[in-house]
Image 1 (cartoon, rainbow, N blue to C red):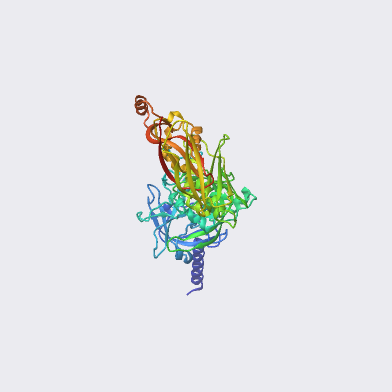
Image 2: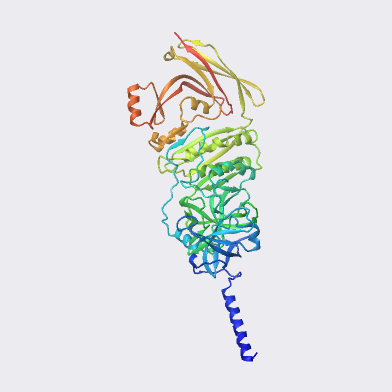
Length: 607
């Protein structure tokens, strides 16, 4: 071989090597301000590089191989890039919840964001990537104000009423999937991590979170500090591939879903590559996050994270991504829980379904999840919900120790929800405050019997009712109640009813569910809440059976039939008729005790 030919071949080899080296994607440096590549430019066999955080806060790369583009996979014009996860670290565990939004680069160009799981238990791991054009589409949507409101229709009021359990918004949350769903693409379900909450407390709220469409783990934490993070410092940390969290609660109690930043343009951030909860316009805190570790699983691997400082606001929660901006911090609802030994301060998103659950969880942590003593025998919880116009809604409840509180947790959340679910006016509370006061002894008591002094009585005489009660240790106690019998009771067949507030509310016609059309103002709504009888102790009431005509939740007895027919024909939803026990007289006894009883004794007033 001639020298000239040898040199020529060597030059060709070197040139080819340089060209291959230039074309090969780098595993060392993440592209900055990378140009975009469309799905039409992709073809099977291309090598892609995905950047995500495996531990800490520094993004690392891993390789994938383009398998192809699945056209219209998520709907008309919404395609997915299908890639095989060729990196041994990721092939072993598959796409991980928390990797959602990890940017995909092909030939140094930004192609999309890791977002979808293809199937479970596959032998070769694949993942779906949302094309970058679809993510950018979300950043251009209208950022109109988001005001959380209750669903129109009916409001559950009764403490024992069954709750409907819809998702977070009108659209079903992406994470609320049934195991019987058709096999296909499923978003890398965001794992919402709790911080500041003991696992035993978190387990009490599993059904609540499931009903809200949230996958929640108690394996999480918080690294928030009192000092705010500047916008410039936040943007330095929040680059493509970095971990980012969307917080639903911040402070001493945290609840946040962690994903990955897909694209940053100035202070504008796109992440996740799929919906968080599918709520559309939102106003949720954007926070920094630190990845502690990845927990591998054949079913659902996820990142364990610490939620960091709030640095901005997520304003869009859409099919292709979540979008937010660094800087402005969204308005939250401050919540305070005072106990004899400690006060918890945290904030929750302003949402009628989420807020009560988060508030109750914070209270539960104070009662059940600390080393404080003094609450074992029993305690009183005073709740105050404050509104912008100075109005408040205050309630008290007595619990027989932590176990009694756990048993009554559903009822507590329902009562709190009734104070927050407001379909009447554009009013949301400004704060919630709880105060926990220990009781000197266990409040549980039992009612042995109720005895009347006579079954027939004349007007002007005194009817005496004797209640025999035993405390939690069986010690007997008697309570006498005297009723002055008025002349207007003459000839009536009456009953003396002894029951707790829940039972008397039901029997006397307080509705379990109220139609929105029956309430005409926010003040009337609060008045309705305030009419609820106390949950502790017993009520002794003289009642008669009657037909009650309800107008805007107010009962009127013996309404003329003609007027009733006219009223109901004009507004059936507003006017209703019910058979009720009408209290003619009542008193509250045994306050501070927890008694479950319902006893009825008949008597007659005669001349």
